[in-house]
Length: 168
Image (cartoon, rainbow, N blue to C red; front, side, top):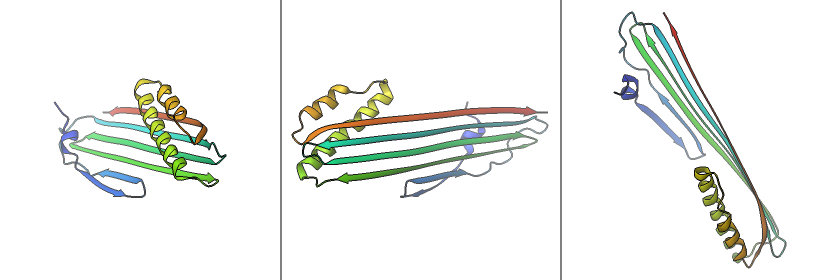
């Protein structure tokens, strides 16, 4: 059986194309039984992700790309004394920086785009399986006529916490 909180929470959403999102929820109607002890529940999750690419072309051009993303989610509920309320908040932000040293040809830009696509799929696979698809990365680089090499670093940190208290 779902809790009255989960069934009653309407979501008010607004989205900003600048990669920031906030969601809020309104207070709930009186649904708790009178004389019930007051209960407070809270949960929060935060994720910080960074990635950095350093790509070198056969002609000596260099492309550096860095990405930073942050996501947060928190929820709080209180019940007792004949009332019940809840609030939820989430937000996300991201930042991408690109630095190009040299003059990239169309062929170099296409192969860099292909490499970034393979890296993205490899990271996604690594998040699910715990291992990077090294064969796909090697095949992409060995099939390249314009790329000399690359370095890639990825880090994700997830923090979660929960709290419960009852008074009465």
